[in-house]
Length: 323
Figure (cartoon, rainbow, N blue to C red):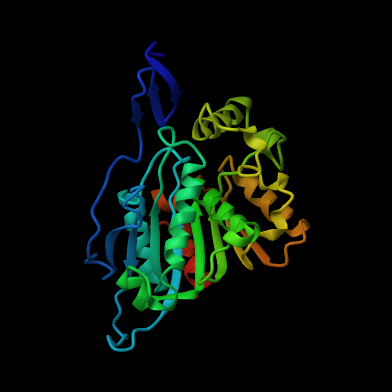
């Protein structure tokens, strides 16, 4: 490895001793626009001019909605994946995926552009996403800053969703909502959560991990988490409840009554999705959780091959869950 490289986590990122960060994936961008194929419209909005927090909003083609009495639609708050390090809401991967999902499910989407590590170590991403939810809640009663949310978003039907690190964020937002006391967000009702190939881990292997996850893989996953947390953080390793919900004594407080977890057979994180559902049920949480496993598929296959049969099936099931 180049002596000037401080950290190299293939295929994601190189960090140099002078502080420069070279992202190796997830750097392509595309603008918000009206999608000709689906009729879905999108725009970028600034949530906080102080922190620079922003989001990309999506609305479906509203063919049966009157301008004088617009139809209220479920609201999905989406958190992109990328190990807290790569990707963005402007990524063609996520932009195209959300165009398709919004069209299929007829929902409003807020896709959050949270700050990424290593420049902004955790809890920056968690805090940004919480602030984005607070901004969403400010539209209760149609009194918010964004016209689309005022007109079209049903804040009594709010869903959280994300893939990989974004699924981790979704879970931790629902935990925060259930445990933050006086800071609980008013004006929105969380009714469901979708975790796709969630980025959870732990020191003790679960399920088939002893056979499928060699030490090199386990070390790489731990390294991503360590990098995301940063050298100056209070990092309890991969058994931090933020990363290992099974270690969270407050797991039963998850503020969401329905959870849909997607796992992929060939994904190293597969058993963590199953373990999450198991621990959620054992915690005393009163909701319902379902796990769906895609046989023969790998991590975030639905983003890399969105037209394959399993990805199409997944899209339809997610759309049904949102309605």
